[in-house]
Length: 331
Ligand SMILES: [Zn+2]
Image (cartoon, rainbow, N blue to C red; front, side, top):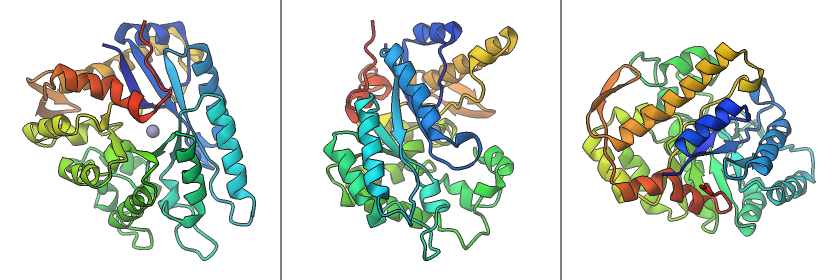
C-alpha cells in the first residue's frame, strides 16, 4: 500500500534514502518552518530544497511552504506574504504552515502575544482558501508543556532539553487553553479554509478532545506527527474506535527532522540514520496494523489493528484529500 508521511522535514535524495522510500512505497510531505533563530532559520532555503526534491521526484516528495512572521512596522507585510505564497503555490507547494511561535513567542507592538486568530492574518488565510490550498497549524504544544517535568510523560526529553519552550510556572505566557481557543476561533472564522492540526491538534492527551474539535469544525483534520506515544498510552480500544469513527480526518505523519543530510554522512553513520528511519516507520506500522502487545519507547501497549479501508485513508487518501495536489502517484 502506498503511504504518505504527511508531516516530515527530510530534504535529501541519497540513493539509500530513495531505496527506503521504495521499500515502503513512501511519499514524504516536507514542511517548512519559519523561525528566526536556531535550526529553522532561513525558511526560504528549506523551501528551495523541498521544491527541488518535489520537482525531481514528484512521486516521492511534496512540500508545504510557510510565511514570514509579522512585521508590524511594514504596511505591506500582508501583500508581501500573499505574493510569496502565490509564488510558492505556483512552484508546487500545496499547503502553508503556521508555527507555534505564533501564540507563544511573537508579540505585537502593544506587548501582547500575537495570536493565530489575530485579524492581521485573516487576509492571508482567506487567500490560502481562495487558492484552494490548506493551512497546517502547529499552535501551542503538548499539554505537558504547561505541567511540571515528569519523567513518565512522552515529552519529558524535549522539555528537559528545551527549557525555553517549557511553560510550567511561566504565567506571563498564554495557557494551553488560551492557545486552543485562539486556534479554534481561527478555524471558525475561516469555514472555507481547510485546516490540518499538526501533532494531533495539540490535544494529544485525549482522543475525546480531538473528536470534539472534529465534530465542531468540518474543515478541520489532524495529523499524528510526533504523537505516536501520546496516542499509544491511551486505552487501545478507545483509540481504535476514534480512528474508525473519524477515518476521514486523521493523517499519518512522523515529524522526523533531518539534522544532517544522509548525503553528507559517512557510510556507517548514514546506514544507522536510514535504519533508524526504517525503525520509526516499522514502529508506527506495527501499532496501527497489529493487535498484539508491544513496547513503544519502553511503554507497553496493544496495537489497534485498523481495518484495511481505514488504514488506506489514514496512510494515503486523507493526505491526498486534505492536501489537494499532493499525491503518492504510486508506480
Ligand atoms: Zn514538524
